[in-house]
Length: 222
Image (cartoon, rainbow, N blue to C red; front, side, top):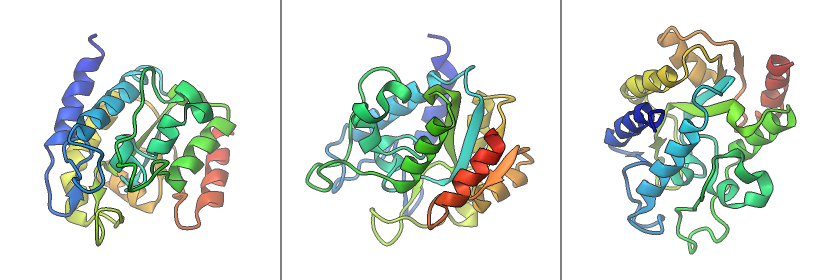
């Protein structure tokens, strides 16, 4: 399975990062909120299959700011919630083939975590007629910058963004010549710092930006 080789190396690069106040979904075990110590391995598997199935196929990359506690922290995939993954009736196999599992503890969130940004992004792209493997979600800072506690978000610091640049470059190298859409001003700024050309810069859907995000994507997708 030669296609998986660069993906495996990339995921190992992601898993290697360790920083204060940053949760690494592909390496760290949240002893309070994860269902068990195998959670990081499940998230690595989710991400591996998600990326492999888009190599050579994706038509656009959506690059946002950072992983959120309701999204990639538990799903392992940017702008995707674990509730979406396990609710196969909602989007089916648009994510990737094979089993999909939640990694949060049921006592913490009985139905699994759901992220408004994930719902908006997947909903808009499907509404526009794209198949699930036609685009890839990612973040300029791939990991979850924790707020006051493990279930809060915060904006990455400039130092954290810098620490994530190598991984961002490695992600982009998996999808050469695929157009990049910056989702939010933070993402636009980081991509500009790397001199990565973007075909569009749209509003991040969080914090009241849903309508502007949809309008921006409609303009880009035509």
